[in-house]
Image (cartoon, rainbow, N blue to C red; front, side, top):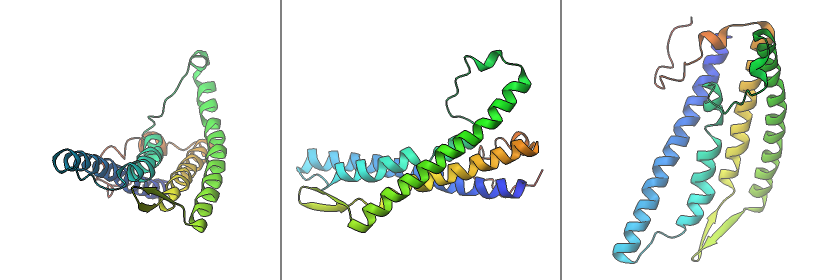
Length: 183
């Protein structure tokens, strides 16, 4: 189980790097666009299309598995906090199966949409510049697919009673330390 988790973590980290790079590129792109527009009256063509159709989907979707792996998604335990700890643990464990089902459906739906946009060669026009928008459509199925794999792993670990998620909870905390020891 530790090796499987290490593979999931490695993929999650690299996809996280892509999302982080998208944030940096977006900041540089928008800043450069504003500076060129103000100083030289020459904005970068299609900035709005590129920001909204490339950077934003990458920033929104790709970190989903990273956040889940660190167990940092929003949780509301207004009612469940009063349950016994054993009941909370079982409820939490079976929630992974529900989340897995939802993520599989989202993966399938976004994959169909991405393939559809790929087939028609989807693009947007801004100031006479055609920007293909179909490539980034594959970010959502990639992100939801990885999240599905993570939820499947978490559910299997719950069913088997494995402590792999407790002992390896923060392996993503040190982004560069992927070659650590198997504990």
